[in-house]
Length: 76
Image (cartoon, rainbow, N blue to C red; front, top):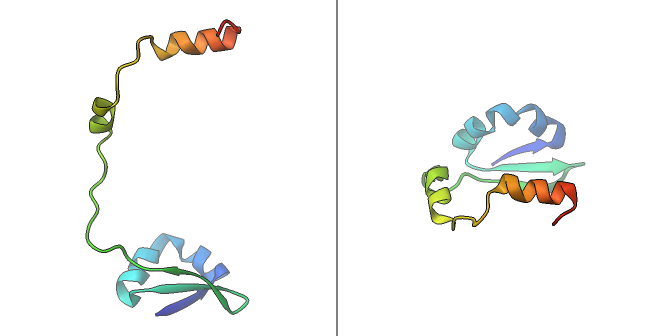
């Protein structure tokens, strides 16, 4: 397990994934005391589909542009 202080963790943000692959787990410390543990997720997670999310949502009776105009003009 690798230990990084806050400053080192901030500097290593761009390659934390590489460190996790190599070390397995990272402990982040502040003034020598552990404040967080980073560990890799088990298995690969698929990226959510925005298209599927939109398809699963109910259609609005009125368009959002109409609702926004009413709210903006104080008619809502």
